[in-house]
Amino acid sequence: MSKFKKKKGGDLPAISTASLPDIVFMLLFFFMVATVMRDSTLMVVNKLPAADQIQKLDKKDRVMYIYAGKPSSRYQDKYGSSARIQLNDKFASVDEVGAFILAERASKRQELQNVLTTALKVDSDTKMGLIQDIKQELRKVQALKINYTTRVGDYTQNLN
Amino acid sequence: MAKRSAPEVNAGSMADIAFLLLIFFLVTTTIETDSGLNRKLPPMEDQVDPPIIREKNIFTVLVSKNDQLLVEEELADISDLRSLAIAFLDNGGGVGDEACEYCQGERDEASSDNPDKAIISLKNDRETSYKVYIAVQNELVAAYNDLRNREFERLFGTELGINYVEAQKQYDDPRTNTERKELLKPKLDQVKAMYPQKLSEAESTKLN
Picture 1 (cartoon, chains in turn green, red):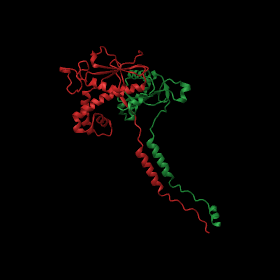
Picture 2 (cartoon, chains in turn brown, red):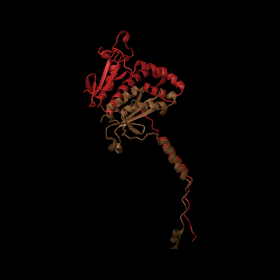
Picture 3 (cartoon, rainbow over the protein chains, first blue to last red):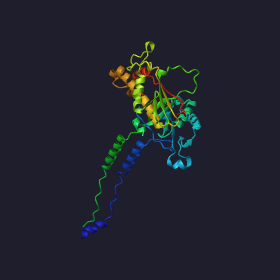
Picture 4 (cartoon, each protein chain N blue to C red):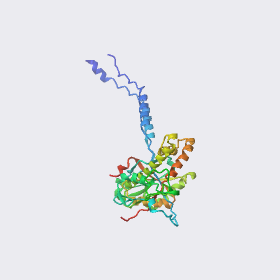
C-alpha cells in the first residue's frame, strides 16, 4: 500500500523549457509575415466595395492614402455619424486634402514625386458627393492618378 | 521502494513541430496588398473650345440618387451594362477613314463610328452610393478589358498564350524581367490603341 503514498511525496520534475524559444520564434515569424504595416489607425468605418477588374497597387512608397467613411462607433458621439475624411491620424475637412497631398508629395523622394498614386479607401456606404469633392481637390493639386481601392469580389456584392 | 521521479518528456522533437507550424503558416498566409480600379482624373485647366463630338459617339451612363441606372436614356439593369457597353464600343459604324476593320459589332449607323471615337460618359448624382458607382465603373472597365482581351488573343494569342489582362499584370509586376517587359510593351500599347479607354466623368449634379 505504501507504494502509492511514496509517489506523492516525490517533488515534480521541472518541465523542460528548451522548446520555448522555438515557440516564441514561431509566433514572432508568424506575426511578422501576416501583419500589414499601417501607419495610421483607422477612425472610420472602412468596408470597401467589391470589384473584379482590378489592378494591384504594388509599390507602397508611391501611394498616398485617403480614407473616408462614417466615423467608427467610438468616435461617433464626438464627430457625428455623417461621412468624414481621414488623413493620417485625424479627421479632416475637404479643403485640407490639397495641403495634405502637397505635404505627402514633398516628403517623398524626388524621382517618385511624379508617379504618385492616391488611393481612395472609401467605405461602400458613402455618398458620391464627398468623393466628388475629394476628386475636385485632387485635381486642383494635380494629383491625377487615383485608385479606388476595393476588395476582390463580384460587383453584385455591392448591390444589396 | 526507491524514490522515483516521473521520467522527463523528450522535448527534442518540439522544435520540429514548431517549424512545421511555422512553415504551414508561412505557406498559407498571403501578405495583403491593396488593389483597386485605377483611374486618371482630368486636369483642371478648362478647355477653351471643347471638341465637337457627335451625339452617336457618346454612350451616356447616368446613376441616379436612388442608384438606378439610365443607359442611353433608358432604364437598364447593371447586369446588362457590360454587354451594352461592348456593343457600343465595338459597333464600328463608320465608313471610309473612320471604318474599323477589327470591330465585330453590328455596324449600326446610329451608334459609334469606331472605338477611337467612342466615348463613355458617366454621370452620377451627389447622393449616389459609392458601392454602386464602383460596380458601374467595374463593369465599364470590364467592357474595355473584354474587348482588349479578344484582340490581344487574336493577334498574339498563339505567340504568348495569355490574354490582355494577364499580360498587363505581368508587365506591372516588378518581378518580371526587363526582357519580358520589352516584349509585352509594344503589344499592350497596340491593343490599348485599338480600344482606347475614353471614359469621361462629368461633375456630379444635384438634379434628378
